[in-house]
Amino acid sequence: MLTSPILKIIRVVLFSITFICFGQTNNDVTIIKNSGLNLIDKSAKIEALGGSFIVSEGPLWDSENNELIFSDVRQNKIFTWSESNGIKEYILPSGSTGYAPSFKKGGIGSNGLAFDKDGDIILCQHGDRRIASISNTATINPNFKTIIDNYNGKRFNSPNDLSISSDGDIYFTDPPYGFYYNQKTFDDKFRELDFNGVFKQSKDGSLHLITKEMSLPNGIALSNDEKYVYVNNCGTEDPKIMKFNTSTFEGKLFFDGSELSKKHKGCFDGLKVHSSGNIFTTAPNGILIISPEGVLIATINYGKPITNCNFDTNEQYLYVTGFDNISRIKLK
Image (cartoon, rainbow, N blue to C red; front, side, top):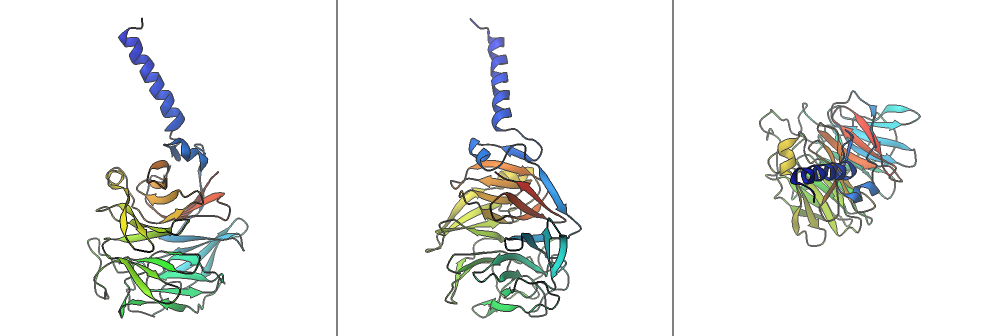
């Protein structure tokens, strides 16, 4: 018969083996649930692609040109990155042209980017405070076309991120991040709306308010069946992901990030939905991989705040924008 001390040793060994197999941290990736191994290898490493940015954001993969398109909100520019050409300036200015009253300081450039069915880029513009479109071509003299710039006659705050449905509906968030921040609060000098909203711009031109109850709505992404839209709430006071029905706009809590926010720096900023239905979201410490049921299955550990992420065409890599750099990590 085994003595109590021997049983304790066996339990410790078994626990250690379990942790190594299913909860191992290789510095860059932590697998929490077995299902995480279907998406990313536990030995995958973060690969830096370039730096010297201020607030890189809005990563968008261009399959036609095999390159990444992304914003720098502070520099008021859009850049590209490719294996063959590295980092290049692409569209400037990107988000502030004098179209709307805005601050010279702060984040005034474009943020979230997406392609429409014609291959044009749809932009969230902080400085111009609108959703606009432009052809996917390098330029220093951009000709932006306004899609929507107001709600009930009042200018938006600073459209931040967007997700476009298969039939052309545009879902987007409108926090105050384009306004000048003085380390305590956002300057309301140019503010016209008294809330931070989540909106749906239908293909017929009608605009719908999904919610005005989120304090800092930020990243947004449609589910694969387009029945739901996920929305991140940024900041440290109410870090979470909400899930809204795209027909009724009924919302419910999808993921509570309050405990993570107590332990790590960073916030729930950008997010994307994988073809498997799993959600990749920026969060305190890096990126969380969350199942469609809201269960955390893996993490990518940046150890610092990051802004957004997106997949390439075949989901071979996840591309990540930080504040000062861009990077990627290989997926399965």
